[in-house]
Image (cartoon, rainbow, N blue to C red; front, side, top):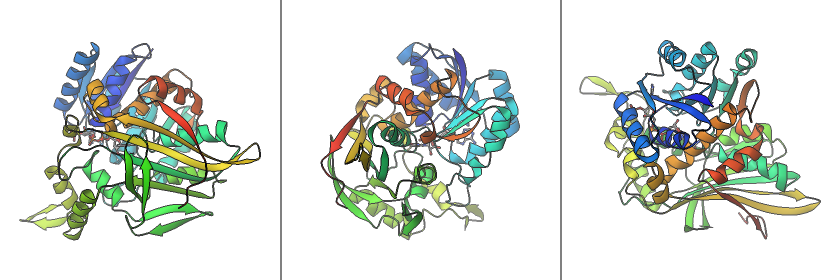
Length: 401
Ligand code: NDP
């Protein structure tokens, strides 16, 4: 039984602590810290109502390494689960090194002034975590996270060699609002408006953002248009699975969402550089975030399902095969259980599972790890038990696009 500190009281953090409270045989004591204490207290109240378990809360600016070190020293957790924003990754990793505590997150570091998320900054911590005998697990959300585990599982059990990999992310949920993002708007819009990139024959193929459209019929959702885009797990999958010749990531967007996004981009509202407004600097995308609905407010409104999975082609026992590993998650069921919609649920549950595998010693190691480097079996097992059941479908033929 272990103590755990979760940083970030947004949608993902809220789900993670609800699930940790359900697993009190693994997590003896949960502390939730975030920038604004009232958010932590709201989550703590919901956890108490839904599970009967009391958790501690604390106010913390995780950009401040000294303050984070002090909090870790007073909480004495076995692992810190970072569910704040990607901007805080390095300062929280520094605090973990200083206090001798394992680290886990769901999104790779991104500097505030440049939409350039990549693993180089966190991979640079490899030697320090190794020397300290500590484990840093990167990207334990759904994508990255479960999709990386699905790939590891495919390679371990379903195919002897993977030739191509497509990650398909479909949110079939409808919140009835004209425009909202289902996780942090600033992070979400920076990701979506970046140029598309996929891995093919040992190099990155770059294209314009959201220009390559493909229709796909998703189980439990129906036909949707999905778009080729860059996503952070492509970088680590290309590094750790050099045998895979082509890796692509696809995400669905509705026409109305794309229309709003295009207008916001055209008028400069998604810019991340400072502009002068009435004598002071503002960053347009941060102002836009203040106008958009908080993702957590979408919980009670969202109906429908998500369907996220990996389609791999390759060879098993000398025979060419195509295998699809997927999870379907229901927004309303996620809300009933944790007070958050499925996007937060599919992020927070894997974060809890990753933390559970570290504290129970099922995942061990010293250094910085991406999810696809770790044993997928105990993780796949817990997904089935913790609300994200998956299945494997043998497809009759590879994707035709
Ligand atoms: P939210 O914006 O809902 O929550 C982020 C929380 O972090 C907020 O409560 C915020 O506080 C807090 N926070 C921000 N800055 C600081 C700081 N300096 N110190 C302490 N707390 C801080 O985001 P989500 O819950 O949707 O996402 C959390 C993380 O999960 C993000 O990194 C996101 O990129 C990642 N993610 C990963 C996915 C995956 O599948 N791998 C999918 C979706 C998200 P406040 O409320 O005061 O602003």
